[in-house]
Length: 288
Image: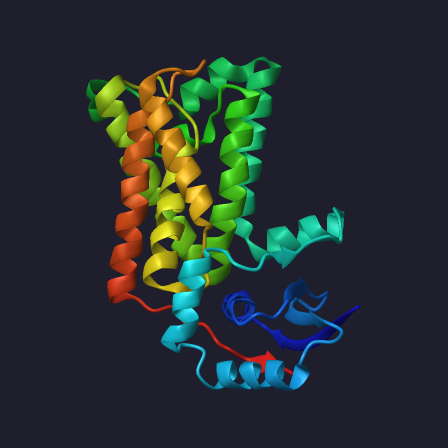
């Protein structure tokens, strides 16, 4: 049986403290409560006096370097307990919590379903890019963004949407919807523009943006752990290996390697720039 000890209104601080306490030898779990708070709990038999003292020290100075160092060393650290199962209530909460992430998910799914049911030509005419010469003539510059919304196979869309739902949601929860919209638009335009220059207009998919949010979360977790955006190093390694495999041309599909690489670099650069010149307003309000 677990004992609830301290609740945070904001996930970044719950994760930071949980990571630190885990490094100190405590067995800690983080639960999302019905009221939206993040509760830290420990098993029976835990030294609650010492545990609570660590919690009080953290509340006094959550930005202390010791917490940031542990967060980076452990990557994502303690995972959020989400064993409560699927329900429409959870879908509604997800949409309310991360509306832009959910909107891109829904749009990509809708576009894919339209393609499956015989409207691929219509979808392609509206969303795919044009050659540089045609694009310069038509001035339809939004076509640098919209290729991100079209996918060509089940595996293609599943891979992209799974990563987007995880990484995009992290950014939107911790840094706000406006920040995710900016990252999406910039990374889509730059990665798609680079792919257009390299291989022409016949490409699509969210993967350029996915690599951008991967790079953003990776570098933000390294440069500013206090933002609460973290990614296990094993996942970063997997995605980098997948990037290299794409260049090896051993897969059954043609990869938009330029979009992937440029997207990754774009995300890393955006994270670096924000870490230098911007600080989100994150409150550390707690209930104990």
